[in-house]
Length: 351
Image 1 (cartoon, one colour):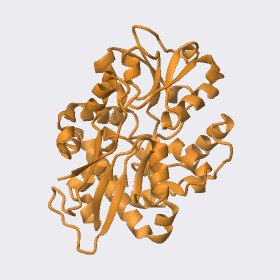
Image 2 (image 1 turned 135 degrees about the vertical axis):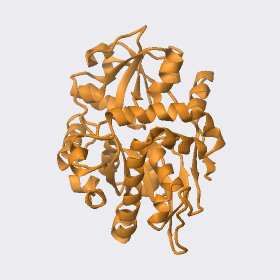
Image 3 (image 1 turned 90 degrees about the vertical axis):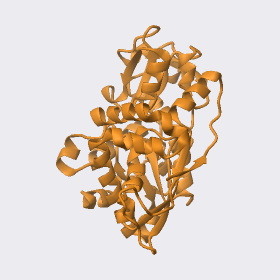
Image 4 (image 1 turned 90 degrees about the horizontal axis):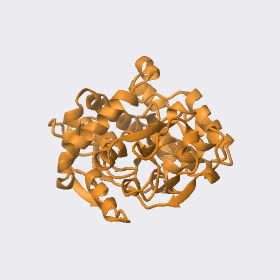
């Protein structure tokens, strides 16, 4: 069974603490080399650490499924730790500095990191479409187009993937950050929406939205993918050094992850239970994780590309479009190449 390793999450109000408790606040790692499926890794197995982008949520289930069902062990891999993070940006820096072998990150944020010379590459796109959106309480504001954001108070975290999305969405739709009143908030910042301290926040439809709907009632949701934010969402990445020095391990990791992702899509309730069972602090979150996973199954895990080429697939066209979007909107000032930001060799071979 997994053992907990916590990262601190600052709470700005009682509502923040409430939301953090709903979402779970921990990561884990087994280190046993034996999954629930009975597979046992060989004595000379590769030991790895995985760095999450935030607290465990449904999207992270495949990593825990791969461990619990023995998919990693089948590939000669032992997961020593699955560690939580505070944002995609921080996770990219940590793994880029060698503090973790593989990581989970928002992929547009990876482009930003690469433009800042952090030596990381995407291995696969778990979310074929970005689940990022702008959310308001429906009883207070209705969001039908980006113009409806004008004049609203928005909660932002300048270092997070949501801020990159927010800036790109505004710029792509002819809006300026001056069109809103920005308030810097501390994650998990959705609670500021619940308490009406802000009018709108960037939100993940496969993460915060189910929590917000319970706490704040009906939401008005403006999907970024409907208004020019045509990019991948969250994916798996590693470092240039790992790819160059141990491509066999990267391939085996990718194989196990893809198998677990398929298993998760076919068995979402079991996957949610496995994630919840990874630590007692997460045990009450089965229903939440199931809702989050269902949002991804319905909207982000698959696409026309995955139907043809398999789960996690990535195209150069989407990557180039992401780079162009971020550069044109001033989110990045130097443009990495597609080859800088992704290596599709492993997902293609895995499929």
